[in-house]
Image 1: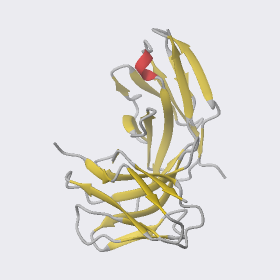
Image 2: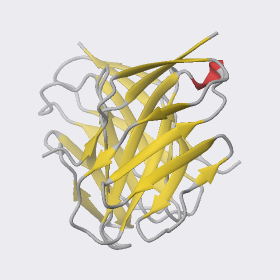
Image 3: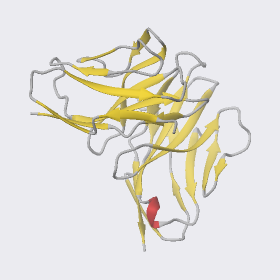
Image 4: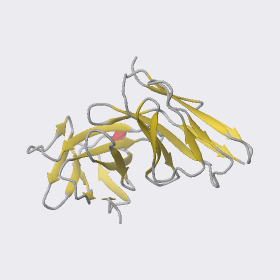
Length: 116
Length: 110
């Protein structure tokens, strides 16, 4: 079964508007971490934001925020005020397990295109 | 500058040859990872290492081998047993929570 689901293969957003990228996850662990990464066409993976399973507040990093709904097992990424440079693939990822022996699993990604 | 380096950026090999991809980090991280990415797909874990001289297989380890003799280095060998080795390979190390990635190596086997 898929541990990370990203149901939007592609998304379009107008420059300066906000966009939400969906991510749902599946785990039976109580302790886990959720991450979003950006991958431009050059290929490097850029870390955007992290949410711990015990964090009560939604994580925010600049224009990025993570809408964490634990009961629904969702961790959507919200990008405010989109910029042309935000056009890229976006991957949701989860880290399960204790501090040792951790494994990360990635979703299939969402391609975001920002329109001028 | 702290970071992860992977070399080379592009690599071409003939079928039947083993090839080793380099990954070096100066972030003083214990955990390191190798992922494979095929076009339009997400990342799949090949191997990971939590400490020196210890490593575990990921989801797609068949046809690959690794070593972790030094904390800074985690080379990946793509062997001739790997049936479809052409892909983009990413190395990462883990900080407090998140992973930091190298620029990747694009391997083409013909």
